[in-house]
Amino acid sequence: MSILTPEILSELEKQAIELPSWAFGNSGTRFRVFGTPGTPRDPFEKIADAAQVHEHTALAPSVALHIPWDTCDFGDLRKHAEDLGMTLGTVNSNTFQDEDYKFGALTHEDAAVRRKAIDHHLACIDVMDATGSRDLKIWLAEGSNYPGQADMRGRQDRLNESLREIYARLGDDQRLVLEYKFFEPAFYHTDVPDWGTSYAQVSTLGEKAMVCLDTGHHAPGTNIEFIVMQLLRLGKLGSFDFNSRFYADDDLIVGAADPFQLFRILFEVVRGGGLNNPDVAFMLDQCHNIEDKIPGQIRSVLNVQEMTARALLVDREALTAAQRSGDVLGANAVFMDAFYTDVRPALAEWRESRGLPADPMAAFAASGYLERIAADRVGGVQAGWGA
Image 1: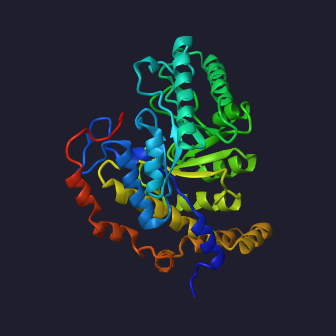
Image 2 (image 1 turned 60 degrees about the vertical axis):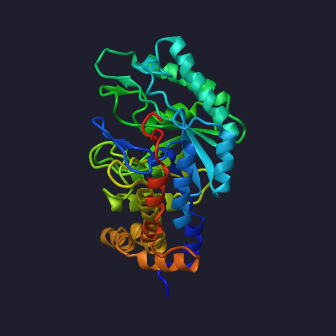
């Protein structure tokens, strides 16, 4: 008998994890961006690569876009995605690669610069209208490097004013999700450095404004699962950006640095009603600097699936009983028993029963797809940061 009950498998079958278009382009460090054979040259080839992840895992039916990196005829891109069995998901804005935004965008002292940044977000909502996307995700690389450099309160006021105008343009079924990051590229203060600031800002906007939690955007030692719990409790956790970090915002494969942390996060998602909840979007936000991109994304969604399965194995009744009786070690043992359970054989068997490869990584490697795109995608400009 499988350790994964029909109830658990039913939850896993519904799981969907959105892929980031930029994960299929070239990326690297601030010292160098590395190229690989077969890297997509346009958004259409990015979607084709993303479709390979979904084909081998049945876990990744949508792709997030980044504007202006993915600018194209969005009607044609939407049809291209649908032809491949995919949909277009979250639209991500970009106010961190323009000279005008050196001292801020939505927070800038200059009303003309703020106007430009607001208009960019309104254009992103136009993209959402064309693609059928629900969420506009905003991450702001804004702040200051030195004490006294900026009026921190004034910047918060201007940010709120800007967000209000963007929010007002949303359609009835669209949302705004505001991401946070505790540092980088600003090193003295960041305008949206933590979940509390993001929550404070979106709470003034309305029900369609939510917080995005990037798992790599926290100081070392931060209890991320506590933040997950709190935002779910408040009804303001709109989306995840899943990745791993060893030091800072490393954007590594989710679960690679600390699988136990991913398990703890997903347990709180399950406990808080966030699993397969349409109001809580799961998305990857990763850069594959040295590994191949498509298998990197396959490995990532499988890691989320495996830790979700373990989180669903927690004996909630036994855990609650131990917690209420003050049985510290007993409660911890219930938790650890689920984490240490190897669900991989059961998941492999389940995949085969659904007509999927038992080992998606091996199946993709044997498919010859990487070799084909390396031969076919010759010429043109490979996609990467800024394209």
